[in-house]
Length: 203
Image 1 (tube, helix red, strand yellow):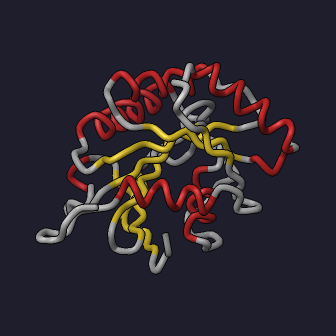
Image 2 (cartoon, rainbow, N blue to C red; image 1 turned 180 degrees about the vertical axis):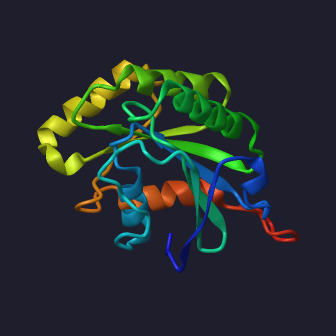
Image 3 (cartoon, one colour; image 1 turned 90 degrees about the vertical axis):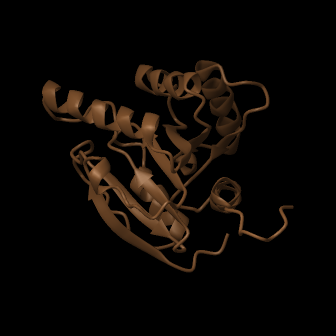
């Protein structure tokens, strides 16, 4: 996938603010410090395109990024150890669940996990929730530059076992620092977001 354009569109808190373009959407979910913004920046090869925060978990909006004028990355609030009240967490959970369950434009979810650690209870809960609702999920293991190649193999196997992934499912190791996995992610997202042009034959 060649990235010809990328644009921040809106920070939305409800369906009335979601774009009404009908374009495909790929949502990003993960713990508050797992590197969702860094992945977006690496994906489009633009520094500081998606803002990173020194205070993980403070953003309580769905951030829409338009890619190639053809589809959206939707960055959802991070789960885990957000420093917010229980009431606010409940509001975020309702907003996230409503989006994931009802958004017709949603094509798939990219769930980010930290390759250095076993999946958390929140990671497992999110994966099971998506699986039970039939939402396609791609697991991306971030911060792969922080460990050796030998450790990578072991950690990927540990993640696969912890999430009880089917044998055919692939976990993509990724590093925003070195761009490891970027080309593979480009290809996978291209398959997810492709739209048929009326009158043209499908391949």
